[in-house]
Length: 484
Image 1 (cartoon, rainbow, N blue to C red):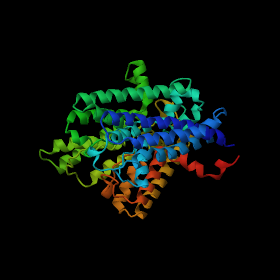
Image 2 (image 1 turned 60 degrees about the horizontal axis):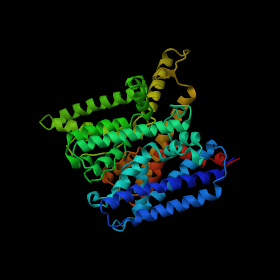
Image 3 (image 1 turned 120 degrees about the vertical axis):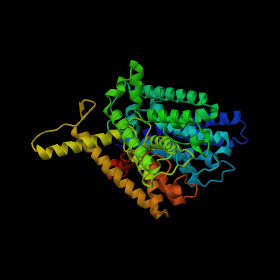
Image 4 (image 1 turned 90 degrees about the horizontal axis):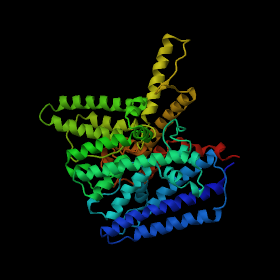
């Protein structure tokens, strides 16, 4: 039976916690001389009061969360988060954005997609720029996981929320006996990597505002920037290299980083079949791209083309979406190929989007086993991952997710065409929003500033579906979900 009182109480808690995220941008804007900070003050007041009105009357009600409660809370909160997060953007006096554009920008930030409707970033208020970067950082590992980690005294049921928000086919892996301790460990690692990335960016020439802002969007594999030219604004190879390293770290399971730090050894990475498969795919694709550019551009521009190709490949496959300003001519198929790598995405339990490499690895190994059965029909072959046998139930779930992902992708693609986009732009928009990569193709290659309201709403729904891995949302449409 659905416990709506518990759902409303926890939604109230989450909204009050989220309202606090409007304060750091306000402080940054105040310190850096922004003329108008009323949008953040108003947003804080609305979110905190609304959360309080939900929580206060129900604060003494305690019941254990069921799986269905957790699913409804997570989906409801992400929808509410997109709407509330849009307030400081919509209320900006000089932007004149529509409600549809504001919600799209907000959802793009919190889902770490990186698609944007804004242009002229260099001239925007610092508070708003910081807010966009912060949104991506909070959405990277998940604000609900943050609440589970650091606020158990608020009575938020941990396990069901954690399992619902964390990505990947296997959600029961813990780093410690208590789920709150696992969530806390992941967030400490996440914050530590962000701090290290910001320090390196600062040493490489960024000011503190840009260094922190880009560290937020690099580790979260979000891709928002404080400049229209993205990382190309800095014209710095060390910045590019640092970004590539930390984008890969962001697309790696945070649990692996924790294990490596705890044991003081990199052996944890070597024992992970998924991580090795991810690096292998990146390496093979890079070699292919380098050879293609060499054939197409055998002159002195080849070196720059390969450097640009590596950055773009890492940016797209990790679903970050950073770009460089120089558009070195590529063979026509390469931009599509590189963008398509976002469909694979990063590792499960990371901040990256896409199908996740663990699913691709399991499907590949299951496919090989099916070929073996053609030779030995009566043999039993087991799919293994990191030395452990994977149950047929998990394999079945992976196939089901793959089928659902393809179906939703095709649906979004055609929906984008119905809203008026041409075939290439619709394909790019579907990949950009569902995989959380950000940049698309055609008319949405740079931004969605000129997209229609219908396109933006299709993209908003697609981003939420991609961030919550489809089934979390689709299950709410089953009649049996609402029955006692």
